[in-house]
Structure formats: C-alpha cells, structure tokens
Image (cartoon, rainbow, N blue to C red; front, side, top):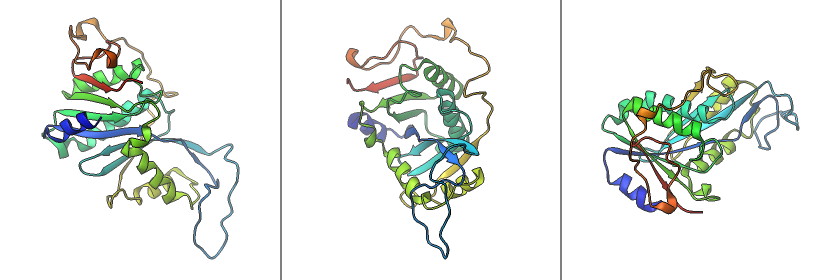
Amino acid sequence: MKQVHAQAASDPETLRISLDTKAKVKIGEFSRGGMARGGEMVQAVDHDMHPDAVLAPAGILELAADQLNIVFGTSRDTSDFVADALELWWTNRREAYGQVRRLQIDLDNGPEIASSRTQFMKRLVEFSDRQQLTLELAYYPPYHSKYNPLERCWGILENHWNGTLLTSIDRVLSWAKTMTWRAVAPIVHLLAPRLRNGRPPHTTRIPAHRRPAQTIHTPAEMEPPDRTSKRVAYFKRPA
C-alpha cells in the first residue's frame, strides 16, 4: 500500500481518495451514549427500535486536500448505493480536479465493495467509461481497515453528535456539516432515493465487445477475477 500511495503522490494526474461506508443512522429520540450541556436533562429512549427513518452514510475523503465528503442515502447500504455516492461526489468535485485522469481508491474488503462483488465492479466499469477515468482499487488486507484514513473520520463524527438527539434527517445533515476533519468542514449530500430496495430497476450484463483482451493487473497471487475493463486495476495484498 505504501508503494502505490507513493506512486499516486508523485503523479499530478492521479487523485487518491478513500471510500468507505458507516453503520446506519437511525432517526428518532434515541440515546447515543454521549453527553450534552444544558440547563435540563435530555430525555432519550434507550432502545433504538422502530426508527422514523434510517440513513446509510458513505464517505469519500480526498487525501491531498483533507476534504471529507459525506453522502447520506435512504436506500440500503448496497454496491449500487456506494457507486451512486461516488458518481455524485465526482459530479460535484471534478471541476476542482481538471487535470486528474486517474483515481486511486483506498477500500477495505466490505461485502458491498469487495473485488468479488460483480455489481460493484460493473458500476465502476460504467463510471470509468463514462468519465474517461482510470481507476486503481487499493484494497487493505483483511482486518486492517483501521489504517484507512476515512475510519478516523467516522470516529470524529460519532463523538461530534453523540450528545444530541438525531430526530430528523435535516438534523443529521446539519450536525454532519458542523464537524471538521483537520480543520476542514465536510461537504454533505443527501442522495435522492432513485433506487428501489437498494437495487437498480433493471439488471444488465456487460456487453462482450466492451471487455478488452487484456487487463491491467498485479502479480498472479494478487490477481482478481477477470471481469473489469482495462481502466480498472487492483492493488491487493494476499491474505
């Protein structure tokens, strides 16, 4: 990982980002185990059953600028939701990175974003083709997600809002906007629920003519299944 990160840092056309999801946020008058200052004691429910709504957070951290982007979705935490969050982020931030032609994405091996998740790989190939970007997926080894910088952002967010009651979606968004990561406020989005039950309305296969004869890959012991385009490469350490 240090080697591929160093390569990204030395290339002005490469942008390194960290991508990860967080545990779902339940909306309601639920205790979050934090503390708050005030003249009166805050009344809260100690069991988070029957929430008014549930939000799935996805985060994208731009390492060079320390810019955190948080996307809250009302669908399930699926591969499509993560891919939608990535596309929303790039749509809003690509003007700031006009020279970028390659994205290096740090990931853990979560079930929604694993290299074996065909729907996630399909969505990344489509994103790469549409935006004309090269994607490099840098996977942390199993049980090493703590080294992903975005994990520390989630801890800061939890400490930031643990003393309040997240009683509405607007309140969640407002509190998320007031946290800081290295003195930089995050960019917060609410993803429109265009997916039903976290799944696309139609499932399509990648056309055979779009699959190249060769795929950029790492050594044989790190090689993923051959189901990506030539603009998607992997850096994955053996278990």
